[in-house]
Structures are given as structure tokens and as C-alpha cells.
Image (cartoon, rainbow, N blue to C red; front, side):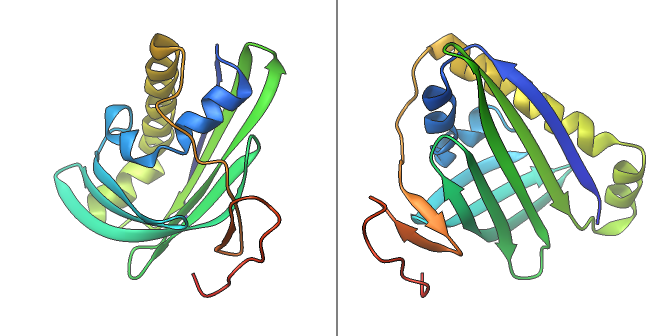
Length: 165
């Protein structure tokens, strides 16, 4: 399974970068090929993508999320895709964002693109657009500060995690 990864430093505080990333429905503003993301539940999303003329719809589960640290996800169903984004404070106004995406390319064009590193360039471009998006705003559009472990959620950290979600 190919892995695409990239890292970028954004000139906003850690909580601002993390909070914006939790607003998944804004992804079409900076992620190439993402047409829409709908938050169905705290740990479940529905995606519509169009990459290289191939449109896909799929659900994904957020499997691990810790505020100001990281978020991990994995698709549900036929499409085998997952990833992790992590956040590291470099100083009070600078945050390092690292994104890794694993996926199983379908068809010749996707496999060829993965083989020559097109995926890394796409992930890098997405992070560069995220940097521009959040730096131009200077503040996040919203925030979800809950924690998810093994696809269960706890919004305060004091509540039991429901593994049925």
C-alpha cells in the first residue's frame, strides 16, 4: 500500500491549527480532489472525492484523536485508505503539521501515479493550501476538542468511551 507524506510549518498557534483541522467540512477549500466532507457523528464522516476524473463516495471513521496532538482515520468498505495528521508546537506562533496518507490505488492510472510520487506532491500541495487557508484567516472556523480512542468518543475525557460508535 503506497504511503504519501509531507510536513509543513504554519504560522499560527498549535490550538488554532488543530482546531481548524477538526472542521472537516472545510477540507474542500484546501484539499485537492475533495468535493465534500459531511460529519455524520463525532467519529464518522462521509466523503465525496474526484481525483483524476474518478469520483468516489465513502465513509471514514476517526479511530484516534487527541486534541492538539493528532488525528487518525480509516475508510470503511471497499476503499482501503487511512492516515494520520499530527501537530507539534515549535513556538507560541508556529506549528508543525505532518500528514501521512496510506491508500490502495485502483486501476492503472492511480497505480502509475503512486509509483512516480504523484501522491506525495498532492499531499504537499494540500498542506501548502492548508497553511495559506489558516494563516490568511488567523483564527479557526470552529473547533471540536473531544477525544476519540478506538473509534469511541469522550468529549470531556471524563465520560466513558462507547465502543459501539
